[in-house]
Image (cartoon, rainbow, N blue to C red):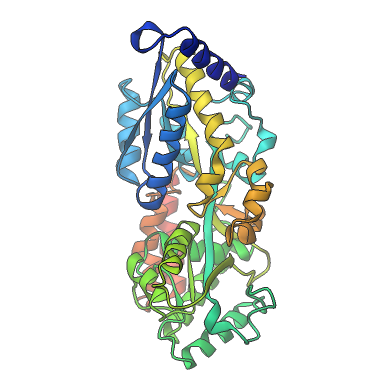
Length: 425
């Protein structure tokens, strides 16, 4: 195995008293887009790797999240100036294939990293592969939206079971019932999320669409057949909640988090990456109530939750040496084996041995919502979808305004279909 070879090389070098230029040290250039708590945890993992592997040293650079990162990758790889390894959203994979910026990862590569496809959740492997099954990146996590909730407020109600988990929400009517009750109890914005547009509104819309079995894209057609009706239903559901004062008016991301932490919302649907925020607030006593998180309830025909994955990708560099690629695979394998630390950021590791471990089972609320890995609804596989894509633009320009009453759900869905279809034709 590559990892064992690397450790042996390091031990041999130490035993021989070699250091610095007297023995080969491989430097791995690393790019990521991880800020905040994610960035802190990843930097800690990089530091630990470097400490344990004197023969391989990761040189990390954090770039701006979203379109700036992917633009930088595309231009750098095109001129042969890309990194040796980078983080990548699997929702961006279709566009990456069109741009030819990724190096395929073979079964032999995985074996060299001490891994196999069977080590990962099926949904993440599918998202990391081409339609014909060629792996293009190695998933590191599944990150999805979860419902963060105020246990203190719900204590003694029909919506909290004996274990303190949400219960009794199996339809839109059930959710509306809970939110209406919370409004009457003094919660000004019972369900908070990033309602002004952007990622938050897309994740809510897509979750409701997929819970109906809806598809954004079918054989290259946007909202084909009855998917149009399902999109309208998803938008109208959010618009009805807004009209009834059950979700906030055009809340920015930070404001939506503050509504929950400040006791204005009883529920907050947001990414698992906010779990550390509420954990920290609980630990320092600033939250003011008991908090927990569960998988978003099934309110329609099937369980489904918007999801994406951070993955490790190798840029398409024909000049990469075998030695450098071996070092990169060592890094990837080591990161998977140490992904429990990444779970501390709220993410569900894509590496099943971590999720199946006793240590992970003790990690709360993470272990409770790990079930969503089986219901993960990844973004449509298309160059127009994924992080910082035209789909996100359509949410900002059409879905969010419809939610807030500036145009009808039908008009928003029809215009979205027309705009996105034009990009595919």
